[in-house]
Image 1 (cartoon, each protein chain N blue to C red):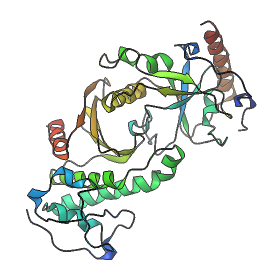
Image 2 (spheres, rainbow over the protein chains, first blue to last red; image 1 turned 90 degrees about the horizontal axis):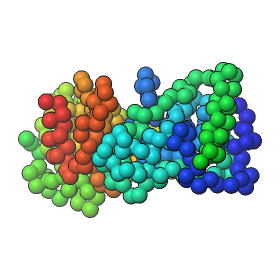
Image 3 (cartoon, rainbow over the protein chains, first blue to last red; image 1 turned 60 degrees about the vertical axis):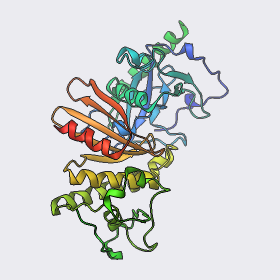
Image 4 (cartoon, each protein chain N blue to C red; image 1 turned 90 degrees about the vertical axis):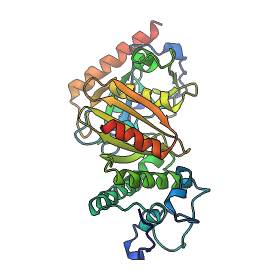
Length: 171
Length: 183
C-alpha cells in the first residue's frame, strides 16, 4: 500500500484539545507476537502504554495507522480503536480514577497529520495500570493482525472519517 | 536449606543473560530483598557464570521439577528480552535494566520454590518486566519496573472487573500476594 498524501501535515493547523469530539476514535497499531499474542482477543496488557500515540479518526482511516513514522507499512500489524470518551472519562468505569483522567492532544507529525497522544498529570503507577487495563477492555478491534481489508470496508472507513470530521467541526 | 558452593562451568552459561552478582555473604538469612539492588549485589568472578550465581545468593534446595521449570522461566525471560529488544527500541522504550532482570530472576527462584511460576513472561512497555499469572477465573499482571518499583493488577476474566491493584514493597510481599491469589 502506498503512503497516503493526506497524512502529510503540510503546515496544516493543530487543533486544540476541545476539538477532539467524545464520539471520535483513536486508532493504534499493535504488533502481533509481542503486543498481540496468537489467539488473544485483544492486545496484551504488558504492551499497552499509558502515554499511547494514536491516529485521530477525523483525519485518518484505520488502515493508515499501519504506517510507522518512517512511512513503512506494517502489513502484519493489527489496528484497534479506542473511544475518546473512554480515554477521557475512565472514571466512569472506575470511580477511583480522577474525573478528568487523561488528556488527549492533537500533535501532528510531518508524516502523520492525524497524530494524537495521551498525556496525564503525573498519575501513579497504580492509576496507570488501571487505566491501561480499562483501555484494553474498552477497545474495538478494527483490523486483526495479518488480515486484509476489502475495498468496501475501506470506503466505509472513509465515510466514517468524514463524519467524524463533521462532528469535530460542530464543537 | 543449604548453600550451594559449586560454580557451574562456562558451557552451562546462558550467554544471553549473565546476572552479575557480587557476593559478600552466603548465608540465606542475611539476604534481604534489598540485596538485589545494584549497589548491594556482589561479584563473584568476572568471567564466570550466570545460572549458578543466583543459587549462591539464595540457597533454596529446589527439586528437579522446580529447577527445570525455573530454568524454563529464566529462558523465557531471556528470550523475551532478546526478541523484543528491537521492537522496544523502535518504540523509544527503555529495555529492562540489569537490576530489574536480576530481581526478576530472584523472584522466579522464590516462585519456583513455592511452585507458583508465571504463565507468561515478557518485557513491559512501561519499562521493566511483566509476569502474567492465570487462574480459573482471574488473571494477574505483575510488573517489575526499571525504577525499582513493583506492582500488580488482578482482573476477573469473565466480567473484566478489576479485583485488586496495588504497588508492592518487596519480593516477599509478592510471594504473599501470589499465595493468596491461588488459594
